[in-house]
Amino acid sequence: MSQEIRNLEPKALWNFFADINAVPRASKKEEKIIAHIVAFGEKLGLETKVDTAQNVLIKKAATQGMENRKTVVLQAHLDMVHQKNNSSDFNFDTQGIVMQISNGWVHAKETTLGADNGIGVAAIMSVLASKDIAHPSIEALFTVDEETGMTGAMGLKPNYLNGEILLNLDTEDDDEISIGCAGGVDITATGTYQEYPIVDQSIAYQISVDGLQGGHSGMDIHKGFGNANKIMNRLLWEGHQNFDVAIAHLKGGGLRNAIPRECKATIVLHEKFQNTFEHAFYSWGKRISKEFQTLEKNLCIDLQPIKLPEKTMAKEAQRKLIMSIYGCFNGVFRMNPTMPDLVETSNNMARITVENGTIEIANLCRSFSESGKENLSNAIQSTFELADLKVHISGDYPGWEPNTETKILAVLKNTYENMFAETPKIQACHAGLECGILGNNYPNMEMISFGPTIRGAHSPDEKANISSTQKFWAYLTEILKNIPDK
Image 1 (cartoon, rainbow, N blue to C red):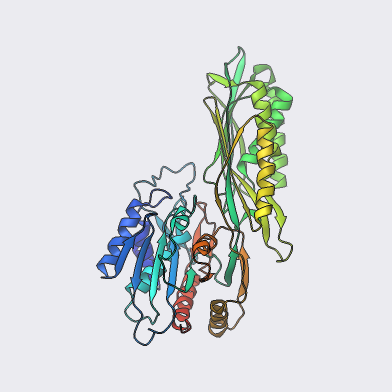
Image 2 (image 1 turned 180 degrees about the horizontal axis):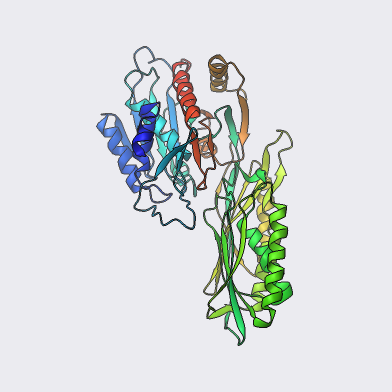
């Protein structure tokens, strides 16, 4: 199937995308992709270097007649979100992404595709390798660790770049031009609990919640998709309240920036409740499934008898855990009061792990407003501390304040209208882009973001639209021709 991808137009872009998708590139494990990009730049004979944060910078001189134009920073991130279906045995550390084509889209087999931000990376590589595309001086900046901390952007030093304009190629709708983004902060609750041996006449079950859409915890948070961790907690609440269910193990979700699609729990209860519990459980599952029936058509809530575990949580620790998960806000907290349909503040309860006497609950809180981010963070922290859990705040990064008066926005808007005979959407996005962080060290650099249409980012349903990628490529190359003079 790789060859079918390589035959798509524009061929240079899809071939570079196939090349980088053959290289494992999880966040914080980018050594191989960094080496790949460095070798690419050096093979072209271009100035190539790696900074202390492990970002790669490749410079290319302006084409003839473009020497007096402003220098442009083309920027994309090298890492990708590694998510797969539970049924998949795919190994992200050793295998390349298996790509497929279906109904005008490129997607992966049971895993994330890496179009976020691999299409942007491939587009920049295509510009660097080209011999017939007019462009000003280019500084190609490939950052690392965007998806789990933005440490590459945070580690970029002042005066490292000379560009006056930054084009971030990480937006996921081809009719949108992004001029702002939310900031974010990681909130992690941890704790310990006592475990007790199983009492006589007990039975055990595994509860599973799966089949949810998942998605990007910034771009998709407003869509009302189910959160597997929160749905599981509703089931555990009912079992705890009505049947004295004891939790032996609980695990759901994965990365902070992905809405959790799956969650599993091992529970124990007295055998005298077997029939009534099973009947009640399926009643709870039907009620929840009906609630989500228009959005989550593949939601599956299941119960299976299993072998008894050795131990379960202490009852009081379990009570506090369930109450804190129930009380922790998840989803859209506040809409932006000045920009219609824009989420201002949200939280994603991304991952829960309860096993072997330890608890970890990972959240990602996002907001355009620093005070709004602080407000929701404080609320989440208070909820978990009331349950005697310790809360650690980390990875705080700023948002990108929208500016509608930049010259580069006018260039992109005019170019889009001339090419496609329609007006693009000028907006900010609730996802975290690196522009806000980069702007701290380069406050005078004009920044803007755009890209091809990608759906299902951060989930195994991720797909990139083929015709949109062609449109994006044509748009990018036309923009480079229209960069203003110095």
